[in-house]
View 1 (cartoon, rainbow, N blue to C red):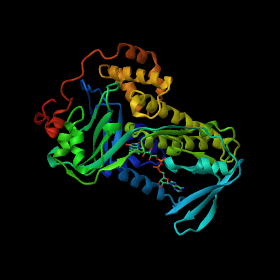
View 2 (cartoon, rainbow, N blue to C red):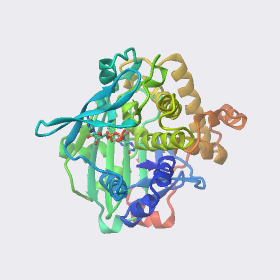
View 3 (cartoon, helix red, strand yellow):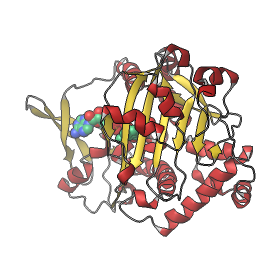
Length: 411
Ligand SMILES: Cc1cc2nc3c(=O)[nH]c(=O)nc-3n(C[C@H](O)[C@H](O)[C@H](O)COP(=O)(O)OP(=O)(O)OC[C@H]3O[C@@H](n4cnc5c(N)ncnc54)[C@H](O)[C@@H]3O)c2cc1C
């Protein structure tokens, strides 16, 4: 899923992307009203939508971005070719050394090198080879395992809402979640996640039982009647890590690092792609303001990227702090305090439209987490939840007909 903050950033850089995705079947799901969400205690109330997320397969999302980018005659893709090193000096990066699969190596000169090579980026080592060392890093390992599988929805279930089921923060035992996302061509992308002894496995016949034993069985009941289209794909690349390039004592001209190469987040919050897109837009804005070769341009861009990373990082690590047993390192005091505050706000959002709107704006990456500290939000957090959650899911008549919830009595 791609949050509206990220979708808007991509649309600003690559006009037409939203339309391409929609034509190919991606759904624009309103937030928070389009998500049916359950935690022990009940179903969350729904509020009018101001934001959205794009729900589709990763292949669809990537394919259309690639098509738009490669339609630009100024862009040339070197297929099956990898970067092996940076060229230049500690003062200025002047290009990269690349290698083909056949083992051919050559150098490419560049005015600006952008590292967007993801979580396994080698830039820290490549910088060291140029004499720039001491990049601070932080890694928070996680015991969370993420298992996903794609299903063909039965025709009568076509039009099901996005469903999220999760254990509550601070409850004993492993953290577990399930998400069913309706994607293109009447399919469901189902993700199950759990920590420690509560982790899902890649066994095909364990997938539905895992979904059925979540705090509410709705996802399990839906997929029990659907045809699986893929095997179960399991990922334990769920830790959070961050490289503080912006704090380097010395930063070369001509190099910018963005996306997962700067930071990765717990995938449960679905923000990595959006943050990468916001990084790219921040770079675009910096280059619109500053000369490419002017001293400090790369560093200015790196600092702008870091501000966006910090917002997403603080949101994700403070939510993780609500489940301290899920990480291999104890959360810091600050993360724990932020986590407790976020938990109060989530409870307030169950009964306050205004708290829900601001919280959604921040989690959809459309506003900085600083918004969560405005006086009305402090008041909302103080009041907490003052109405009980719903006993039944807040489905529209159309959704109710699709999910046929009458078949599924409350557990
Ligand atoms: C299980 C899981 C589920 C997730 N779900 C979501 C979600 O729902 N929503 C969301 O927003 N995010 C999600 N994420 C996070 C998201 O996948 C990443 O944040 C996002 O892909 C980062 O984009 P990127 O371009 O920085 O890196 P990547 O997408 O990793 O792309 C890096 C690219 O660089 C290439 N590359 C690497 N090294 C080199 C080299 N030396 N030379 C040349 N090319 C190289 C790689 O082949 C790759 O194509 C999820 C992550 C995981 C693990």
